[in-house]
Length: 358
Image (cartoon, rainbow, N blue to C red; front, top):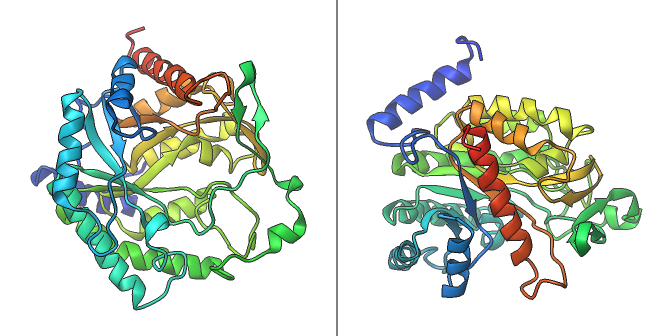
């Protein structure tokens, strides 16, 4: 990246201030090293012991949401301390904007959205006070859309999308959100970020937004998605130039945007990684391309996942690598424990390999 890049100048100033305040340095939390993490489990004894057996030491949480208060500090602290008993660090949580607060993005309705954004900001403060310094969220309008699951090796069933199998009348059917143009979608996102990111910066909480999964043609179900191509992702990052504004970088969701994921994923990694705007990574492979794909285990998809992880390392990324959308099988009594165990082992091995320890 050229030194004249204005984004780099603004971000460097913010990083310097954050570093002076003990904030979001990429090397301050874990000695500059990536680690396996999961967001796919609750907090029962059995679940936490399973994660211990799989060599997982970091976990994302989903905290109880209270419509009038958001999160309650004592509940977050108790959950964090419970995980610590099992040797697990809670270093991430879902901020449920899409799930619980529809007026911010889905409807974009004032004054209701202002009250909901105030609640979001208070939840960020609560997370910081509880020792949770990274949150992921979603500014999508449509849910994840898939066609019928498809069978993979050993009887695993993976989610898939074949856009040509979705009838035209279904693609044209509006949701409750109505017609949401790209301009409307951007306005809602910008309105949120202008109010949320300064609070995150004050309280030193990294905010990672998700890409829109899957990419769909403009006007699909009435919505113009804006975070499902390279230019949209660049625009998003430039709305707020802060070391606390970045991505939940889903390798699978980005691959879904591309005609040739095996070669086209690396410019995304280099661009956003070199700007220190990747705060967590969803490590999901796939077979196929834009509008026609099925998800895959990390070693069987189109992308070379050793090379992907090495590219992330080379940008200085040093946070969690999370399995994502793992397949299920009827042969597993738990449905997904086998695939999670496989993915945890794979990720730990890849991390060792890219750091030269294999």
